[in-house]
Image (cartoon, rainbow, N blue to C red; front, top):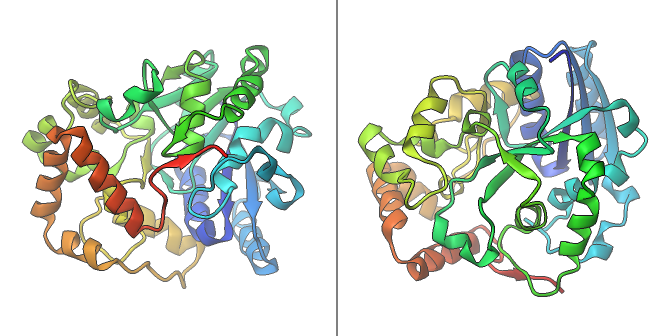
Length: 335
């Protein structure tokens, strides 16, 4: 793969995290020709200057910025995620990026909290997929209400532009967005899974590895990634760990690899590139609950395994508590 267009959506709160991801992409992807697209929100003059400084160090990489303020996506009434519409913006990339689409064959979407650690040229093996995505870590029973054959994590998406258009993926998304009966836990990700369930095919999970794959020892990993309980299986995880491609800093009780912690397995990889983007970056502070887990890693691991086998109603209560601590509504409904 000689050329790759890559999309990020990011508000100014996550700017340093995204720039760290971009640096990891440029440094480790082994793609000769990268074009990076950024759908932005609430950027200040100094934010644009920070982006310019990063790309000045990589003159062979081109980039485009699309301020979300120029597009009225609030009209679709999708619930905010973390008090912003920026995550939902990728649902409308064909409209927002329409001037650049004619020059694209494929588009790789990456969440801002990703870190590229391996060669991405093997993505060319999956170019015929309309949408390529990795199975999510989530527990099977949690998503029975969606009636989907598989649930995918939308933090990494490989999109074939021509097939996206031919299969009318935009139309499918809009139809689901206007469905007034759907309960949304993770608004944009849920919509993608429900609306495009017939268009998504699985990528190897090495392209979207979470802290959970690295947190446990082999025995614990086998318990946590039980294929009867989770979408990801122990065997898939073991194979992926032999050749990781992309780390995704999601989950783990929201103990992020750019917070002041000892337990997240991705701390070193993320902080290396974030500090390259901004040497003055200040780590996030942990909440009291997160400090408890950080100081007792055995408790963290055992509690995660216990949740794997707990009744669904108990998992729902724990999820609601965790999201409440993060200031996120755990159940959001279409208006």
